[in-house]
Amino acid sequence: MKTLPDPPASPQSPPRILLVEDDPTSRAFLTAALQAIPAEVDAADSLAGALALLGGRHYDLWMFDANLPDGDGRDLLARARLEQPDAMALAHTASNDAEVRGTLLAAGFRDVLIKPMPASAVQWAVRHALGLGAPTESMGTVADTQPTWDDVAATAALNGNQAHVAILRQLFIAELPQTRERILAAARSGDRDSVQAELHKLRASCGFVGAARLADTVRALQSQPDATDVLECFDRAALDIVERSGNNDGKPDYS
Image 1: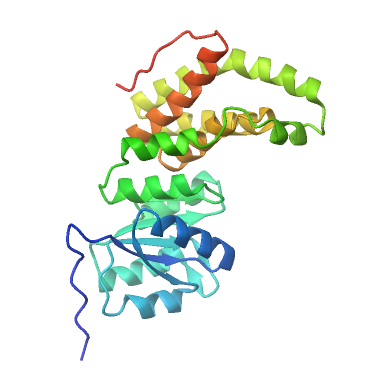
Image 2 (image 1 turned 45 degrees about the vertical axis):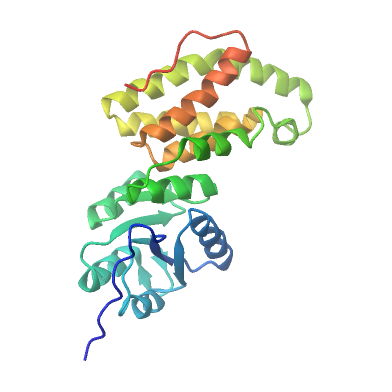
């Protein structure tokens, strides 16, 4: 006799999430990030473990690793749909390959998160998928906790050469207004490939010059290229650098 599933959480209850991740460190990180939303999290390290948890439980969202020791995320999703056809599903993978992303989306995942990723990107993706929105105060706090410039990281990235850091930052600041405009224009037109291509280059540049706050928002936007609130957070961080440098050639535009 099949066990009846638990009832869905009430509107006042935290969402219940099934997390599947075989790496212990990644699983612990993702669990903590999800619990901070807040959410109730059940975690499994394999396809078999996930299927065992699925029996008799209702989940508001699934987060499945694309590659598991005993299968893959697409197979798990297909089998999980037999238990709960309407659950929202997100995939996470270390692969940045566009073909991998396309395959996962075609399998039925709503979005694909690329590891490693900051906790803010995980939380934004989940809140967006569940229609919870991202509170303005939370977005601001996430962006503001990082300094604009991380001198230690930049110096380390350039083998301790502070003169090179200064030169690269000048070039970075000079190019940032045009990069920002290209990203905003591509986002407005729905050109996700161009958005991702620009963000990929900008993320690397942020690392070389130690643009810590902007780098966090770039990673979040890579995970959620369609989220307006994340785009706004990115734009605020970019404009802050531009305005402080006295090189402001634009104002926020999210239309």
